[in-house]
Length: 306
Picture (cartoon, rainbow, N blue to C red):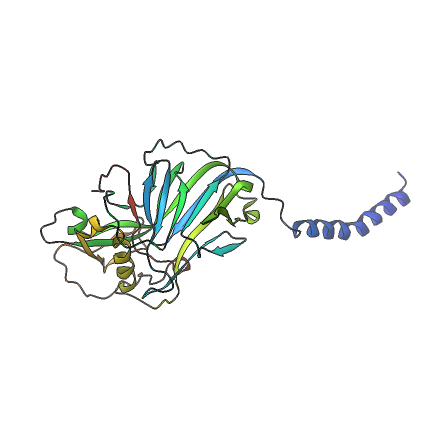
Protein backbone atom coordinates (compact mmCIF):
# COMPACT_ATOMS: atom_id res chain seq x y z
CA UNK A 1 0.00 0.00 0.00
CA UNK A 2 1.33 3.46 -0.89
CA UNK A 3 2.06 5.88 1.95
CA UNK A 4 -0.63 8.27 0.64
CA UNK A 5 -3.23 5.48 0.65
CA UNK A 6 -2.09 4.39 4.12
CA UNK A 7 -2.55 7.91 5.50
CA UNK A 8 -5.96 8.15 3.85
CA UNK A 9 -7.02 4.84 5.43
CA UNK A 10 -5.70 5.90 8.83
CA UNK A 11 -7.55 9.19 8.59
CA UNK A 12 -10.78 7.39 7.73
CA UNK A 13 -10.34 5.10 10.72
CA UNK A 14 -9.68 8.08 13.02
CA UNK A 15 -12.83 9.77 11.80
CA UNK A 16 -14.82 6.58 12.20
CA UNK A 17 -13.53 5.82 15.70
CA UNK A 18 -15.78 8.32 17.56
CA UNK A 19 -18.80 6.96 15.73
CA UNK A 20 -17.82 3.40 16.65
CA UNK A 21 -17.36 4.40 20.30
CA UNK A 22 -20.68 6.26 20.29
CA UNK A 23 -22.40 3.27 18.76
CA UNK A 24 -20.93 0.96 21.43
CA UNK A 25 -21.97 3.39 24.16
CA UNK A 26 -25.50 3.55 22.80
CA UNK A 27 -25.65 -0.25 22.81
CA UNK A 28 -24.35 -0.47 26.37
CA UNK A 29 -26.95 2.05 27.57
CA UNK A 30 -29.84 0.56 25.66
CA UNK A 31 -32.66 -1.36 27.32
CA UNK A 32 -31.54 -4.65 28.95
CA UNK A 33 -32.11 -7.89 27.13
CA UNK A 34 -35.17 -9.99 27.80
CA UNK A 35 -35.13 -11.84 31.11
CA UNK A 36 -35.75 -15.26 29.61
CA UNK A 37 -32.90 -17.21 31.21
CA UNK A 38 -32.43 -20.33 33.27
CA UNK A 39 -30.40 -19.74 36.41
CA UNK A 40 -30.69 -20.00 40.23
CA UNK A 41 -33.32 -17.83 41.90
CA UNK A 42 -32.87 -16.51 45.45
CA UNK A 43 -36.07 -15.48 47.23
CA UNK A 44 -35.14 -13.41 50.29
CA UNK A 45 -37.70 -13.12 53.08
CA UNK A 46 -36.76 -9.95 54.96
CA UNK A 47 -39.01 -9.50 57.97
CA UNK A 48 -40.83 -11.27 60.80
CA UNK A 49 -42.38 -14.19 58.90
CA UNK A 50 -43.50 -17.59 60.20
CA UNK A 51 -42.73 -20.55 57.92
CA UNK A 52 -45.26 -23.36 58.30
CA UNK A 53 -44.04 -26.47 56.47
CA UNK A 54 -46.82 -28.00 54.38
CA UNK A 55 -45.54 -30.99 52.40
CA UNK A 56 -43.45 -29.78 49.45
CA UNK A 57 -44.27 -26.15 50.10
CA UNK A 58 -44.17 -23.55 52.85
CA UNK A 59 -47.11 -21.50 54.03
CA UNK A 60 -45.38 -18.27 55.00
CA UNK A 61 -47.71 -16.68 57.55
CA UNK A 62 -47.53 -12.90 57.89
CA UNK A 63 -48.35 -11.80 61.47
CA UNK A 64 -51.31 -9.43 61.99
CA UNK A 65 -49.31 -6.20 61.88
CA UNK A 66 -51.01 -4.51 58.92
CA UNK A 67 -52.09 -0.89 58.54
CA UNK A 68 -54.79 -1.19 61.20
CA UNK A 69 -52.46 -2.56 63.89
CA UNK A 70 -50.84 -0.64 66.73
CA UNK A 71 -47.53 -0.73 64.85
CA UNK A 72 -48.45 -0.84 61.15
CA UNK A 73 -46.32 -2.55 58.49
CA UNK A 74 -46.37 -2.76 54.71
CA UNK A 75 -45.65 -6.14 53.09
CA UNK A 76 -44.25 -5.88 49.58
CA UNK A 77 -42.28 -7.78 46.96
CA UNK A 78 -39.54 -6.40 44.78
CA UNK A 79 -36.52 -6.90 42.55
CA UNK A 80 -33.92 -4.30 41.61
CA UNK A 81 -36.11 -3.46 38.61
CA UNK A 82 -39.73 -3.40 39.89
CA UNK A 83 -41.81 -3.83 43.06
CA UNK A 84 -45.40 -4.10 44.30
CA UNK A 85 -47.23 -3.99 47.64
CA UNK A 86 -48.69 -7.32 48.77
CA UNK A 87 -52.17 -6.41 49.96
CA UNK A 88 -55.86 -6.82 49.24
CA UNK A 89 -55.95 -10.65 49.15
CA UNK A 90 -55.94 -13.44 51.78
CA UNK A 91 -53.38 -15.61 49.96
CA UNK A 92 -50.50 -15.13 47.55
CA UNK A 93 -48.59 -17.92 45.78
CA UNK A 94 -45.12 -17.90 44.29
CA UNK A 95 -44.78 -19.94 41.09
CA UNK A 96 -41.22 -20.89 40.18
CA UNK A 97 -41.14 -21.96 36.54
CA UNK A 98 -39.05 -24.98 35.62
CA UNK A 99 -38.37 -25.90 39.25
CA UNK A 100 -39.75 -29.02 40.91
CA UNK A 101 -39.32 -29.42 44.65
CA UNK A 102 -37.56 -32.62 45.68
CA UNK A 103 -37.76 -32.22 49.46
CA UNK A 104 -40.19 -35.13 49.82
CA UNK A 105 -41.84 -33.29 52.70
CA UNK A 106 -38.59 -32.97 54.67
CA UNK A 107 -36.95 -29.67 55.53
CA UNK A 108 -34.52 -28.68 52.74
CA UNK A 109 -30.80 -28.48 53.64
CA UNK A 110 -30.18 -25.51 55.92
CA UNK A 111 -27.08 -23.31 56.36
CA UNK A 112 -26.36 -19.90 57.82
CA UNK A 113 -27.70 -18.28 61.00
CA UNK A 114 -29.85 -20.70 63.07
CA UNK A 115 -33.61 -20.25 63.16
CA UNK A 116 -36.15 -20.51 65.98
CA UNK A 117 -38.28 -23.62 65.59
CA UNK A 118 -41.46 -24.80 67.29
CA UNK A 119 -43.71 -27.76 66.58
CA UNK A 120 -46.99 -27.47 64.71
CA UNK A 121 -50.01 -27.87 66.95
CA UNK A 122 -53.81 -28.01 66.95
CA UNK A 123 -56.20 -25.08 67.00
CA UNK A 124 -55.97 -21.65 65.51
CA UNK A 125 -55.23 -18.31 67.09
CA UNK A 126 -55.37 -14.82 65.64
CA UNK A 127 -55.60 -15.00 61.82
CA UNK A 128 -52.49 -13.96 59.87
CA UNK A 129 -52.49 -10.79 57.83
CA UNK A 130 -52.25 -13.13 54.83
CA UNK A 131 -50.48 -16.33 53.74
CA UNK A 132 -47.72 -16.47 51.14
CA UNK A 133 -47.20 -19.94 49.64
CA UNK A 134 -43.80 -20.88 48.22
CA UNK A 135 -42.46 -24.25 46.97
CA UNK A 136 -39.88 -25.92 49.20
CA UNK A 137 -36.53 -24.72 47.83
CA UNK A 138 -33.29 -26.52 47.08
CA UNK A 139 -31.64 -24.89 50.09
CA UNK A 140 -32.52 -22.50 52.94
CA UNK A 141 -30.04 -19.97 54.35
CA UNK A 142 -30.57 -18.13 57.65
CA UNK A 143 -29.66 -14.44 57.35
CA UNK A 144 -29.51 -11.22 59.39
CA UNK A 145 -28.75 -12.48 62.92
CA UNK A 146 -30.27 -11.13 66.10
CA UNK A 147 -29.95 -12.38 69.69
CA UNK A 148 -32.92 -13.10 71.95
CA UNK A 149 -34.24 -15.18 74.82
CA UNK A 150 -37.87 -16.26 75.14
CA UNK A 151 -39.71 -15.31 78.31
CA UNK A 152 -41.49 -18.53 79.22
CA UNK A 153 -43.85 -19.76 81.89
CA UNK A 154 -42.09 -20.47 85.21
CA UNK A 155 -40.32 -23.80 85.39
CA UNK A 156 -39.63 -24.09 81.65
CA UNK A 157 -36.09 -25.35 81.12
CA UNK A 158 -35.77 -25.26 77.33
CA UNK A 159 -32.48 -23.52 76.39
CA UNK A 160 -34.29 -20.84 74.37
CA UNK A 161 -36.03 -19.83 77.64
CA UNK A 162 -32.90 -19.71 79.79
CA UNK A 163 -30.16 -18.20 77.61
CA UNK A 164 -29.66 -15.70 74.83
CA UNK A 165 -29.32 -17.43 71.48
CA UNK A 166 -28.53 -16.22 67.98
CA UNK A 167 -31.47 -16.40 65.58
CA UNK A 168 -32.02 -15.49 61.94
CA UNK A 169 -34.41 -12.60 61.34
CA UNK A 170 -34.74 -13.52 57.67
CA UNK A 171 -34.35 -16.47 55.29
CA UNK A 172 -33.09 -16.94 51.74
CA UNK A 173 -34.79 -19.66 49.69
CA UNK A 174 -32.51 -20.90 46.90
CA UNK A 175 -34.09 -22.49 43.82
CA UNK A 176 -31.89 -24.11 41.15
CA UNK A 177 -32.51 -24.15 37.38
CA UNK A 178 -35.36 -21.65 37.26
CA UNK A 179 -36.97 -20.32 34.09
CA UNK A 180 -37.05 -16.65 35.12
CA UNK A 181 -39.69 -15.80 32.54
CA UNK A 182 -42.08 -18.11 34.41
CA UNK A 183 -41.63 -16.68 37.91
CA UNK A 184 -44.92 -15.16 39.03
CA UNK A 185 -46.82 -14.22 42.19
CA UNK A 186 -50.54 -14.90 41.96
CA UNK A 187 -53.34 -13.79 44.29
CA UNK A 188 -56.36 -15.83 45.39
CA UNK A 189 -59.85 -14.37 45.15
CA UNK A 190 -63.41 -15.65 44.94
CA UNK A 191 -62.87 -16.07 41.20
CA UNK A 192 -59.72 -18.17 41.72
CA UNK A 193 -56.01 -17.35 41.34
CA UNK A 194 -54.95 -14.53 39.07
CA UNK A 195 -51.62 -12.95 38.10
CA UNK A 196 -50.66 -10.28 40.65
CA UNK A 197 -46.95 -9.43 40.35
CA UNK A 198 -44.45 -10.33 37.64
CA UNK A 199 -40.90 -9.89 39.00
CA UNK A 200 -38.57 -8.18 36.54
CA UNK A 201 -35.03 -9.59 36.47
CA UNK A 202 -33.46 -7.53 33.68
CA UNK A 203 -30.97 -5.95 36.12
CA UNK A 204 -29.80 -9.44 37.14
CA UNK A 205 -29.03 -10.50 33.57
CA UNK A 206 -25.24 -10.38 34.03
CA UNK A 207 -25.31 -12.00 37.49
CA UNK A 208 -24.97 -15.69 38.34
CA UNK A 209 -28.39 -15.69 40.01
CA UNK A 210 -31.58 -13.61 40.15
CA UNK A 211 -33.11 -12.26 43.35
CA UNK A 212 -36.59 -11.27 44.50
CA UNK A 213 -37.22 -10.07 48.07
CA UNK A 214 -40.37 -10.33 50.18
CA UNK A 215 -40.40 -7.52 52.73
CA UNK A 216 -42.31 -6.64 55.91
CA UNK A 217 -41.46 -2.99 56.54
CA UNK A 218 -42.70 -0.82 59.43
CA UNK A 219 -44.50 2.32 58.32
CA UNK A 220 -43.15 4.22 61.31
CA UNK A 221 -39.63 3.79 62.56
CA UNK A 222 -37.80 5.42 65.45
CA UNK A 223 -34.59 4.61 67.28
CA UNK A 224 -35.54 1.67 69.48
CA UNK A 225 -32.65 0.38 71.63
CA UNK A 226 -35.12 -1.42 73.91
CA UNK A 227 -36.65 -3.40 71.01
CA UNK A 228 -40.23 -2.43 71.93
CA UNK A 229 -41.18 -2.72 68.27
CA UNK A 230 -39.69 -6.20 67.81
CA UNK A 231 -41.28 -7.38 71.08
CA UNK A 232 -44.71 -6.26 69.86
CA UNK A 233 -44.23 -7.99 66.52
CA UNK A 234 -43.03 -11.19 68.22
CA UNK A 235 -46.17 -11.29 70.37
CA UNK A 236 -48.26 -10.90 67.21
CA UNK A 237 -46.39 -13.81 65.65
CA UNK A 238 -46.98 -16.05 68.66
CA UNK A 239 -50.66 -14.98 68.81
CA UNK A 240 -51.31 -17.10 65.69
CA UNK A 241 -50.37 -20.31 67.57
CA UNK A 242 -52.32 -20.94 70.81
CA UNK A 243 -50.21 -23.99 71.80
CA UNK A 244 -47.10 -21.81 71.63
CA UNK A 245 -48.67 -19.11 73.79
CA UNK A 246 -49.08 -21.63 76.61
CA UNK A 247 -45.30 -21.66 77.03
CA UNK A 248 -43.90 -18.45 75.51
CA UNK A 249 -45.22 -15.20 76.96
CA UNK A 250 -42.73 -12.59 75.70
CA UNK A 251 -39.22 -12.11 74.33
CA UNK A 252 -36.09 -10.35 75.57
CA UNK A 253 -33.23 -9.16 73.36
CA UNK A 254 -29.56 -9.28 74.25
CA UNK A 255 -28.48 -5.79 75.32
CA UNK A 256 -24.88 -6.54 74.34
CA UNK A 257 -25.54 -8.10 70.96
CA UNK A 258 -22.59 -7.26 68.72
CA UNK A 259 -23.56 -7.45 65.03
CA UNK A 260 -20.02 -6.54 63.93
CA UNK A 261 -18.44 -9.86 64.96
CA UNK A 262 -18.28 -12.79 62.57
CA UNK A 263 -20.41 -14.61 63.40
CA UNK A 264 -22.50 -12.04 65.29
CA UNK A 265 -22.66 -12.74 69.01
CA UNK A 266 -24.24 -11.80 72.33
CA UNK A 267 -21.39 -10.65 74.58
CA UNK A 268 -23.34 -10.79 77.83
CA UNK A 269 -21.65 -12.92 80.49
CA UNK A 270 -23.39 -14.90 83.26
CA UNK A 271 -24.22 -12.61 86.18
CA UNK A 272 -23.43 -9.45 84.20
CA UNK A 273 -25.65 -6.54 85.19
CA UNK A 274 -28.08 -5.34 82.57
CA UNK A 275 -28.48 -1.74 81.55
CA UNK A 276 -24.93 -0.87 80.73
CA UNK A 277 -24.09 1.29 77.74
CA UNK A 278 -24.86 0.10 74.25
CA UNK A 279 -21.64 -1.05 72.54
CA UNK A 280 -20.43 1.52 69.97
CA UNK A 281 -20.90 -0.99 67.15
CA UNK A 282 -24.62 -1.36 67.89
CA UNK A 283 -26.66 -0.79 64.73
CA UNK A 284 -30.17 0.46 65.42
CA UNK A 285 -31.36 0.17 61.81
CA UNK A 286 -31.29 -2.73 59.38
CA UNK A 287 -31.71 -3.43 55.65
CA UNK A 288 -34.62 -1.34 54.34
CA UNK A 289 -35.74 -1.06 57.99
CA UNK A 290 -37.53 -4.40 57.74
CA UNK A 291 -38.71 -5.86 61.03
CA UNK A 292 -35.86 -7.62 62.82
CA UNK A 293 -37.63 -10.02 65.17
CA UNK A 294 -36.57 -13.69 64.94
CA UNK A 295 -38.32 -15.62 62.19
CA UNK A 296 -39.77 -19.00 63.13
CA UNK A 297 -40.07 -22.29 61.27
CA UNK A 298 -42.82 -24.72 62.21
CA UNK A 299 -41.72 -28.03 60.65
CA UNK A 300 -44.06 -30.89 59.86
CA UNK A 301 -43.95 -33.52 62.57
CA UNK A 302 -42.71 -31.23 65.34
CA UNK A 303 -39.18 -31.27 66.75
CA UNK A 304 -38.31 -28.03 68.46
CA UNK A 305 -34.93 -26.47 67.90
CA UNK A 306 -32.70 -27.15 70.91
